Image (tube, rainbow, N blue to C red; front, side, top):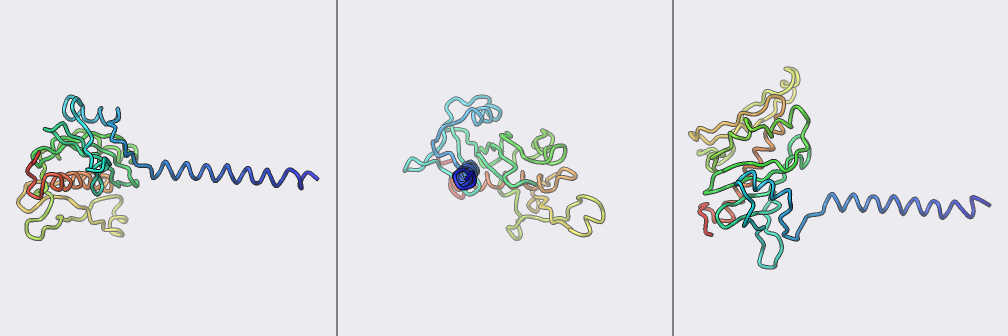
Amino acid sequence: MFNEKIKPPLVLTLICVITCGLLVAAYQATYVDSTGVVTDELKAGITELYGSAEGFEMLKNDDGSVLTYEGVDSVLSNGKNTAFEVTADGYSTDGIHVLIGVDGGSVSGISILSLGETPGLGSRVQEKSFLSQFGGVTKEMTVSEESGETVKAKAVWGTRSRINELELDKEIMGGSGSGFTLDAISGATFSSKGMYSAVQTALNAYDELNGEDGEDNG
């Protein structure tokens, strides 16, 4: 009697609970803010970059939606300074969430919004000693002058046997003759590459925003 009357609704209830949980998880994982509101998190990042968030607004398309580019979640500007909200893969998928200031075609600063990289290894990409090397970097400095492709070198990562097994291609950036070489964090190749990728994304978006010549048309 119990099984006939109680079990079916109980099973149905459990199915509904599990389904709702999965829907909520999927929503949180895929939700993208399209309201155009500059959150407290973004204001804090802008303040770190420029000293104040006053006057900064999230740029929008003609239809009122938030302006985005590939890899760029939003663009914030006060008419003079520009910051790009970028999410990039490091060792973890979407493990790097940063705000990158780009002014006059070069990186003016990087503010960490959140970091999902390995504590003590990948998490070190937030250290000032690592981030400071990106100051003044331009798009032209990140590609080879001869081929237009990123300069590559072999990564030194992990044990010697692991190195020999994987021989990871680490994008130690620097256009030929640019004088820029990324000093990657030892043991954090993927996180270092991820941060560099975020910088490239911001520089590419800056060019798209202001024209391929990178001149500020605003």
